[in-house]
Every structure is written in C-alpha cells, then in structure tokens.
Image (cartoon, rainbow, N blue to C red; front, side):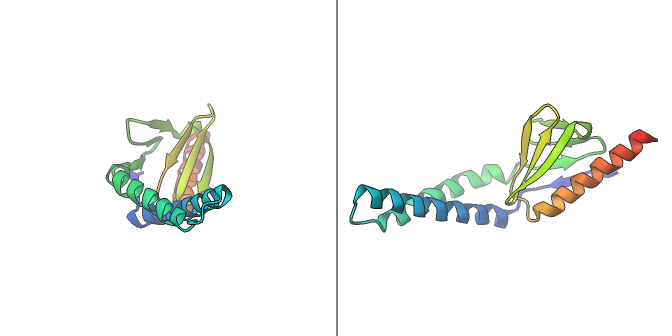
Length: 135
C-alpha cells in the first residue's frame, strides 16, 4: 500500500474559525448583557477580532501539521506514531478526525476537507490490516 497523506485544508481551517467566532461573539455579547453594559454590540466586535487574530496567528503552524498513513502506522507531526493495530475508535468532530487508541490516547487530524472520507480511508486501512493478520 502506498502512503496516504492527510494535509490540513485552508478552507476547513477558516470554516472552523468562523464557527469559533460566532460562539465567541454570542458569548461576549451575553456576558456584556448580563453585566448590564449598554454597549452589548461591542462583544461581537471583540469576539470576532479575537478569533480572527488567533486564526491568522496560528494558521502557518497548523497548515504544516500533516498526517501520513502507512502500511502499519499512522505518522503524525512531532514524530507521533500510532500503530494501526492500536486504534480503537475513529470519531468525527467537525472537520477534525479523532483517533482513540486502545491505551486511551487521543490524537487529532485537524482541518480535513472531508472528515468522513478521512475516516473511511483509515477504516479501510484497519480492515486491510485485520485481513492480513488473519492470513
């Protein structure tokens, strides 16, 4: 099997940050409203600015976090190596795929353009490994 690569997607990154911005805007406006501030609308500006700055600042780092699927392992950034035989569960969290191992460790393949397709590819690799081990 050739190596399959799961790079982060720029549009998925910004889509995730747009949802974060909505949550931050509503949250900040709610806090200002509870405090009795007459300028509740400034919470929306603050929430949008905070998430926009965060997104711009972290984007260059996040776009380098590439995962690779080999024959028997999933290799991640920072020398993370997950044996396929150790994968217990695959979950979708928006544009992120969560890998849970039998040991309880959790890893995130973030900002996938199609998280369902990423999970399907990983499940196919797990099935292939399982078939090979039975032979």
